[in-house]
Length: 105
Image (cartoon, rainbow, N blue to C red; front, side, top):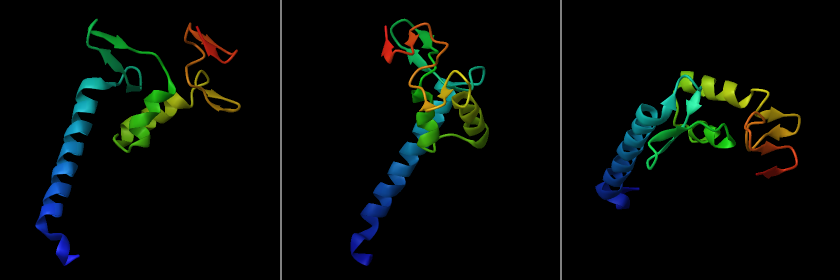
């Protein structure tokens, strides 16, 4: 272990700091308490993309959420529009583009 030296510890600390900054930015800019999950922001139209898809699970999977956000995301994913008898849908069944024929039009 001693041969690794301080450079690796310094790099690891920098990566942890960058991850903390990214997590803080994720929460500050994309968390939507009213939706119960993070939403995407279209930088061209400057509008929220509020589509409910399995992607809302990614911050939870990455461990980049606090306890209340984890609870809200889990509740969103467990909703009847997202959770089916065979697992998590890729898109909400309440989305107008959703089709049970395994296609999105």
